[in-house]
Length: 149
Image 1 (cartoon, helix red, strand yellow):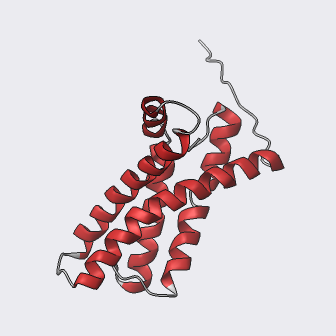
Image 2: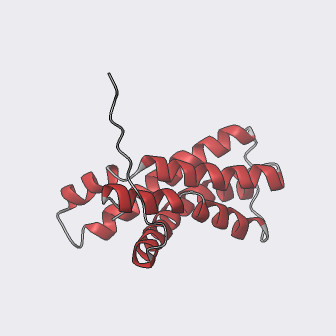
């Protein structure tokens, strides 16, 4: 018996969707970066001798938490705090984890990890922004869902 396959044709040239995906990705990046880079900076400036992978793991966790917190705060102006929190928790974890992984892989590849320098931060932010952007566009087009709000 033959199985029917459904294909979803995505228009990858729709500027309004790219603009919305770019805006949403920017807010996710801000939230993730606060926790991620704040954690790395804390360990770096305090000279705490944790293993690099432990610092990077904690940075990713804190990045996810601060992203959820920022999105909850932003959306709480449009809905109840409970609804805002549920929406923030329901954000695309795939997008946020990809963003966090890209930022931290960039840091490890360029500095050895858990080191913020004036030149690596923009590269980390660029990698963190570009990595989930196509997925966020696809999610908007295919599912009608934003990664953030």
